[in-house]
Image 1: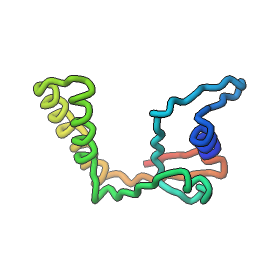
Image 2: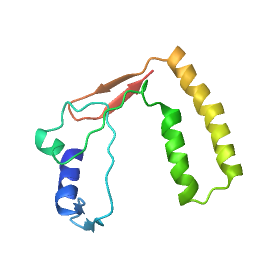
Image 3: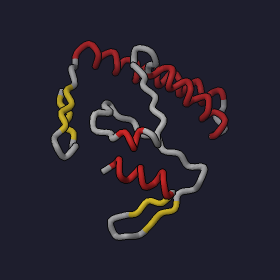
Image 4: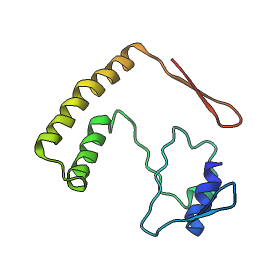
Length: 121
């Protein structure tokens, strides 16, 4: 479903809903889709996309957070105090949570034929 929705949106710059209403997409809007697998993506869809594959051991959450924070600092006019507070909160809570999950939890993601996902720990 997501593939057909995005393919139409990319080609026509219009998203149609189930009630046949349409949403026009501005030229400066881009889509970012994150997935764990490209198994069910068709070659025609891939030709319309840029694909970036990142292993978490290469680009972890800290690098992604710092990159986001640099942009957010400008976009939201964050003071140095707020940047510091966000950084401390992320390091304290997210860092510890990820470390705990890596050590104690094994996630299994099962996908059925309808592409619904069930996450179990």
